[in-house]
Image (cartoon, rainbow, N blue to C red):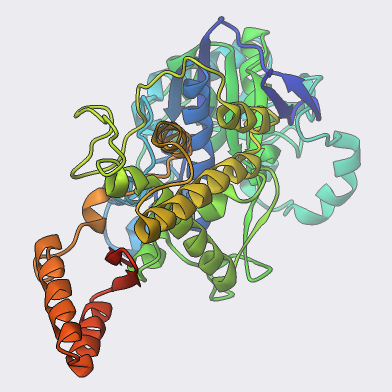
Length: 497
């Protein structure tokens, strides 16, 4: 089962082979921190979080870097409106980013470089481009000479001659920046300081870097000349990732990344998400409405990561129901393990409080569920196919749980059920789907098991006395507290709904 990935650069699916055996260097173009993260950010961060988890699951040592763009016109504009500073705005929304991602169960990256903390690397890269004839200064600005890089357009498939026709209609020839360029396609590596804007000293004068050069410098500083996976949204293919390739490879003469992976965009009720359409939803707005974060993860993972995904109330409702099914399976061991005589130990499964972690259990015999999961996901991170296995396991465990409650025993041997449950917990953990046990424990106002048994005894006595009104009252009282009674020839059994 070889992992194969669709590479945007080559436009085909290829076997995954890393620069260094057993190790993955992965970079994700992160957020520009001028506002709260929205559903598009949620999808991207969940997808690349699960990609990283899966690579670790199949044995790779992954170094995962995600940047923050903290120099940008949008940040400056917000700072002006709020009579604040670019740094204060960036710090506020970086803090908000971590809060939102923690709620979604996103594991933190190994490092979060910021453009403002990479200024030496940025200037060094610009200087090297200038020395090699790929960049030129112009009145305090520095521009990349696009036509000097013969392979420009290889990622997006765009050709300069095809873009030339429409370019003249879109540019303002009176724009001072346009007049500085030697060619309309050239883009800024360094921008001269404007009055009132933050600026850094450089060989070309005070100013700040362009957006594209920031990522090239951060990749090189943190991961080296060539990385294994460069990830981001499909909207970044052109011009951002195209320009990254041009900048980095012109200097190093090496591929910037072996595999370019891009997630599809998020639509809302079939339309592009935008503030002007009134369909713009932030992560915290969605979660504050009571949507379960795990349902959001499940919603994202039910679509192939490269395709667009449509956010609708119906889709979230379906994901919520789906998560309930998986959650019931994850909690099966907590609810029934002791009754089935399982030896769960005390460390690996975290029974009692908190999240159920991925166990360290190894499987000495073939596990068809594991094999089918990996066979699906190894096909270009086919997480929807992997979810099929989780649903199958969860539904089987739920069925066996119902049988156990109603009949006092299961159809499947307890040892096999434990193996199925451990498999479900492991695979759910790979996808970042975790059920909180403490959320499922009963509040202090709920009846204890002993109190329920006492109520059942009172009901039995009422029935013997032929006081059926009292018997029905006790049944209804228990039902109101989500406790169902099942009468049989062997007596009365009960379970919490």
